[in-house]
Image 1 (tube, one colour):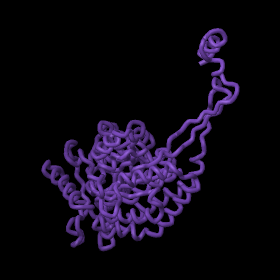
Image 2 (cartoon, rainbow, N blue to C red):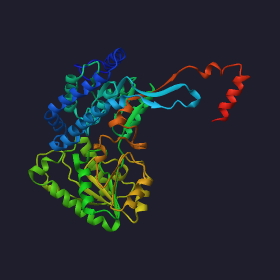
Image 3 (cartoon, one colour):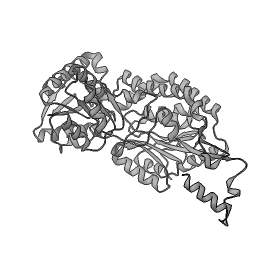
Image 4 (cartoon, rainbow, N blue to C red):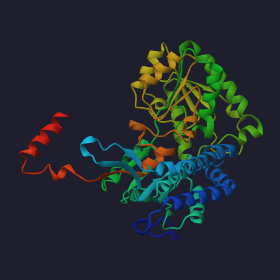
Length: 474
């Protein structure tokens, strides 16, 4: 097996330690609550350390975006889980049906065992700890693999979790892509992966060798549809927030905008106005996040180069000359107008501050444009006409929807989060996270007398009559 560094044990040995401990003592309600409360206290006390680690990994990351996108979401998830956990754990009464009387039926949500979590780099704390909270709440032990692209944050997570949990309950493995591949092949009771669709396919294939169930939180092309009735100023303001938060390095960021043809140029003007107002002067650029590494920066510039080669009009939403000198990997927010469907910005998930704007003739045309493509992780509908909004909701299947705003569907702790099709499978957050990491175990209790004492071979006489009666009464 692989060792990511000399300070960590073999990941196979770590996995076996986690499993043996879980088999010996499964965490009861009191233990789960205590674990979550200790995590809450420790995490709250180290938010500044988290902010510094993430910013160091990105080259620069807005402090407030780290607090909002990482700290606030995780603490909200813990708080909601603590408030609801007792009710989630109660057995659910079900009907046994008259044919099985006297009997009672229930479903118990029991922990699966050892859960593996592979976290990405774009929100390296949120997307590691939010699924961990759900797995702990469900009574599992957890083996976490943070992203190798944010090594300082990975070290922060390892230190934080070591202070809260014994190594037999939660462990962290650090390492690169080779270790991730080996990690995916461990015989977990559930494997949770957040990342690209291409890597998600590999993770699913590796897990299949052990018949390990997987949750895949992937990405894709999430559209924002600006309906004819939409308030353009409001739409521009909220699309700018969703797109340029974390410099667009967000899996649910609006990936492209569909707008009525006669309103396209006005939307571009309003977006430029919004971006210029947000990012100017020292304070403004302190709040503009860098692209995480050279590879991602080169990839994003390649998207713009492809658009230029194809002759697509590009509009700088912020003058590149105004970007502060000395900051590495800053990419100015840029709109690409009416790119061809086969251009790179329309084929690939962007994951950066580039916003294709596609004009349409009718709302039906815009909806068809989305329906003909892979199902998105997020759908953003802007409009003040209920019929227009309903037309979009009725025809488009997406991982999640936010009407007249962006990103907030992820922040709602009581709503499930998850993709569909190419954007993923399975859910977490709130009760759905608890259910994902649990087995819904049905329990039927039979009491006296039992029909099985009568309905048995040889099937004749009274037995024959009872079988025919039951069949007729279906």
